[in-house]
Every structure is written in C-alpha cells, then in structure tokens.
Length: 290
Image (tube, rainbow, N blue to C red):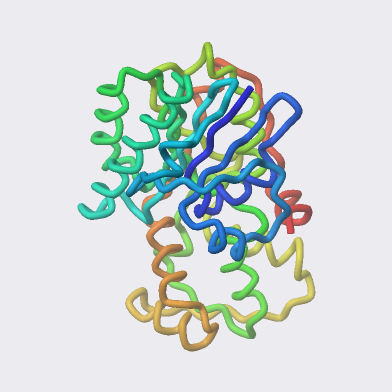
C-alpha cells in the first residue's frame, strides 16, 4: 500500500520517516524545506522524501504524483498548538491542501493525528474533514516518547544535574506516555479500510504514571548511580530555574509544560475492542529506544 505522510517536522513525523515503511507499506513523506528537514534528522530515512509546499502549493504540488495511487494518507499536526487562532487557520489551510493532494492521487482515506492537548479545538478540523467527503479518522494521542522526544531530552538534562527542582502541581500530572515506535506499529496494524471510519479515537500507553514517577523510572533505568537531590519550589519560579540551572531553552520548557498541562490518562477503550495490540513496557522503551 502507498502511504502519503505529512507533518514530518513533528517528532512523530521524523520517526515515521525512519520506522514506518515496511515491505507492504510504502511511505512517501512530503515536506516544504528538504534541506532543513534533513539537518534535523537523527535516524536514517527509510521512506521516500519529496518537496511539496502544502501552504503555498506551487509547481511541486501540481506535479506530485504517486502512479499506483494513495491507499492511506496520514497527516500529523503541523502547528505547535491548535489553541491559537493563527495556528488553527494555518492548520486548516495545509490540511485542506493535503486533502486535495490526496484526492488528486486517488486517495480516499485520511488519518489525522493530533496531541491530546488539541482536543478542545478539534471541532473545526473535524468539520473540514467531514465537508471534504473523504473517509477520516482523528487520532488524539498521549505524549509520544522515545529517542529524541521532548520528554526524553528533558529527563536526561534533569538527571545529569545535581539538583532536581520541582513543584507539586507539575510533578503529579498523570498521563499515559506512549512509545513513538509503538504508535507507528499501531498505525501499521490497523485495518484502515474497515476500522474507525469517520471516528475520533484516543490512544495512550498502557501505564498511567506521574511526571515524578517517569523521572524516577528514567533515573532507575539509565542512571541508577546518579546523585540528584530534589528541591520543592513554588510553581511560579520553575521556568526560571530550569533555564538558568539546566540551560533548557525557554521554548522547550514552554512546549513540555503545555503538553503536560493537558495530558490525562487514556484507557484505550475506544479502539481496544476492535483490534489486539500490546504495548512495550515503559522501562524497556527507556532502555532500548536511545
């Protein structure tokens, strides 16, 4: 099956370009700036990569062709958040053009993948998909983890310091982190011709943990001898401490906290009755996907 993939600059998009292609799953990734995308890669590409601008379209858009037709089109959210007006409008423009490109290549099946934090703003995306007269599935996912993820980088930086500043609100956020490789394996195993037609489903890992528990699991698995002392701080000074003590970029702190503030546990009941799937234990994900 020929698979069209957009949203490559996201973490999941990068990993999909290296880990989603199979013998019967031929992935064609499209991106606006090839050189910029390649400079940010940390794994070998196994999919086909093409230059296509979904915002302005142009000659590459018009000439893009998959001769045997698209069996499945996957769109991973392009913008940092759907909760801002400008971002949402940009998302709707690029998604509309992605749908057009899919149809021009014979595609009639789209999977739209967003973060759990986008759930309150998904209605306009759903309305566009419905109006496009194309079979769709909206997938809202818990935080994807693994090599190169926001959480992975965040945890390594914290554990490599001497002190761990934290606040109770942030440390006790509960979520179901999902291995990025598990999520890609799940995408591959779904029968998209038969399942989840015109539905919105949620997916997360099998284990519910707090941010604090995740930190302890990273430390136990990768740095068992690390001597890190915890310091409880007021919530309002956390960002300043992270930037000054750990040299974590302000943008990374904002992105991680924004993700975590809207995370919550998912029980996967919206899809588990349809298909069998087993998740990789978190300790194995942390240990093996580095």
